[in-house]
Amino acid sequence: MSKTEPRTESAPTDMGRASAAPEEAATMQAQQQPAETVSKRAVVAVLITTFGNTAATLMPAIVTLPIVVARIAPHNKETGLGIALGILAFVGMLFSPLFGAISDRTTSRLGMRKPGMIVGPAVTVLGLVLLGIAGSLAFVYTAMLVVALGQAVTNASHQAMVPDSIPEHARGRVYGFSSVMGVLAGLLASIVGPQFIDNQFVMATLAVPVFIVTSVIGVVIYRDRYLDARDVPPQPLLRTLVHGYRFNPKTAPDFTWVWLGRFLITFGIAFTGSFAIYFLTDELGVTKGELPSMVAVNSTLSLAGTLVGTIIGSVVTDKVRSRKSLVLVSALILAAGGVIVAFTPSVTVFFIGTALIYLAVGLFIPTDGVLVMSVLPGGDKEVSKFMSLVVIADQLPRSVGPMIAPAIIAAGGVTALGGYPVLYLAAGAFAIVGGVLVRRVRSVS
Image 1: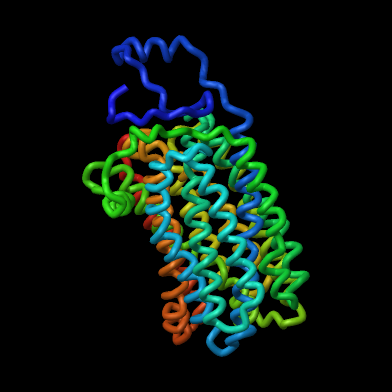
Image 2 (image 1 turned 180 degrees about the vertical axis):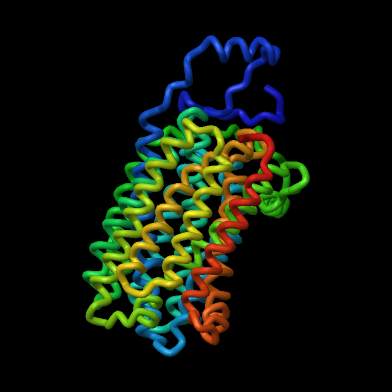
């Protein structure tokens, strides 16, 4: 084995297999052999870790943070929430490629991914506990910083699990089912969480026990890849860190277009997320007494829409090869939901628009996820690095979006529509542009 190829051991479905036969013979052999078997252990590990991680982190982001910030700074809640969400996303964006590069070079006896599956959840839990006791915006920001660091470590390992251990022919379904598990976790947290709206600590740490248990189970059952220390590039740590962020768009234009498409569509999603609570109270006049039930209904419809969209997307994306078209369709549906919300005359219509938006989100998740894995540069040697670079396309909009949203709301406030409706229209515009850009991908349909 040459020094340019890492000596990795993995589950039977490891991507790192190579053939010494000529290309033509390899092609004939692939045509004669049945599809690679999917490891049940790998699938269970992916699903259970996704469930626990989402259960622990989604509830604070969509319910706890808006309520805590509004309680601490009622007259500056939009800016306070924007900064908190911005920290959460920006730190994750900044450090994900770093931890991804480190994960790809990890030679631990536990494997390449398991160290991050242990350290990441531990740091995340610490941040959630800090959020539960935060009494000032500075304390909230500190808690979000810790949560973001924990999630950057966790996600660097989690995102490599599917490309590491699941054959290409099954990735769409596994990615989709993983998204479904995330939706179910979020659904449970969003139904139960608002019932503790007056107990900040419980809202922040509600699913921490589940997170701990699922993380332990995931570490125990997952068959990790192993990297021989002799195959780690002999370069200084600083160069390794820089390598985690290095990417030339000209060498992989399709990856670049997919990245840009995800970036813009996620911008639209970021505008429609945590500000929904303020839309209900400020635009539609929902009272404090009505808010818990309204939040529960809105969260349930949002996650139900995501669930339905994810199921459709995960099945269709493995059967219909035109994934670029599916991404564009999801962007158009999101924009339609944004228009409905912007012109809503009532809470009921708002709920319909929100459900449509998250139907689009659910359709987008597995479709774009498989599209990303289809255009990853570098083969299996830098999976975690490039999957972590994709995290930037997720996290940069979630970082910048909440920070510029108050400016859009303020600008929209001088129009006949009002600030929050204009924000939802802007979300739709970003999504459509992102969907159109993905059409420029050439290597896949």
